[in-house]
Length: 555
Image 1 (cartoon, one colour):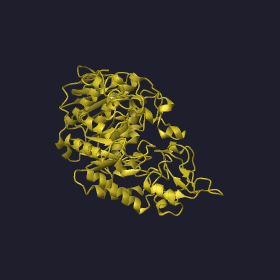
Image 2 (tube, rainbow, N blue to C red):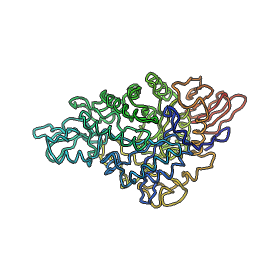
Image 3 (cartoon, rainbow, N blue to C red):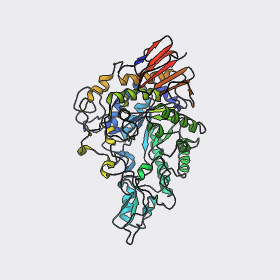
Image 4 (tube, rainbow, N blue to C red):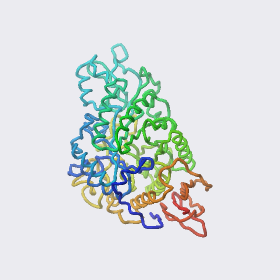
């Protein structure tokens, strides 16, 4: 795999003064760390906060601006920490509050910001509120903080409505006294009732707890789910999970959520340092997503429509235009993302035919997938706004698609319906070294088995190799910082291009992405900055290979 760049990478070591950069979130590159799979400091096979802290210099040198940490709160781990029992405590498997404090402080000293996950749609069934609600029985005031209801049928033997869990099966579970409680995810994740004032009071207190510890923002899990339609009406459809992100749902994207986020924004604005909110909001349209990032609400929202777009020039151009058009009126930055902890890694998605969705258990054509993934990365980083990088994608890691069933831990797999339950494949611990029992992840094994050959994709193996995917990311992020026309913005100027090719200008910067399966000839727009593959330039023209993205500057 070859790549080109025209000069030595810029110095990528960030300094603490970067933290003071105004409106940093409008063009930030944010790196997602999945704590249990990033670095293990104590050899128990599970990643932890101390492991992350010791690896922060790697992230600084990679060139990212902020680190988003998936949940590390006290939790029974029914859904890898997205079932929170105590929002003000660190789960012992990850460390303790002193470890969290040290991580935040060290990150700031390195010029990195820390964004933590917040899970406000549901708690763990081991949360003190829920345990007491169940123990106290019908009529308990604590049941009003969740959605407890009597069942239907002669003896209440049927669920209160026909809603289905995202993880498969009914979205209701019956407790021994006969009442049912709502859980849009696993039964161990009961949904809060956000109509109850105590829930809002508690979460504003939780926000202040972590803001006082110095975190720079929150990624809001299931930001679209907090408010349910009045009366919890039947949906009247089966296989409801297939409607997610495509249709109006009585339990998602209700207008009432916006009042909650306006309250939260007032809390956040009490703190100095440009703290931010990022919404995980699955909505039917990008225009609905824009409602979450109006000036008095949240700062960013994940662009799931872009993530789900095939490697196709026409489809990509349509979603890029729609995204920019939707964000421009509300003054929010667009965000761009290719992978996260819930979807098959894009190096594997792009290795397969389009139309298979975002959860795939097929390896596909590894060489093709990597070539497209590299090209897609340069396209993403050239677009105006903020970009997200999921741990290991800078190594070109594929999904691990052949995990034995006996080691899988995704609750969606065990529920048997709903989501495909293949998320474990993108959560396998990343490799740091060529050798070792867990390729440098920790001192012994890893909580999910790593495949043979993982070491050749490791940070150690790729560092210093000019053709490696890691060095492509490092160079791209350095060039992105250098080029004044990259980063923040709200528009691109499309250029005439052959079929299957995207070409656009941003000031003196030009990006060309060939999504086709054959080489194309385009103008050589100026000085070549970087390419994801080998580009031949002759007499003012450039031959751009299939599945290749090129950056030029006309300066």
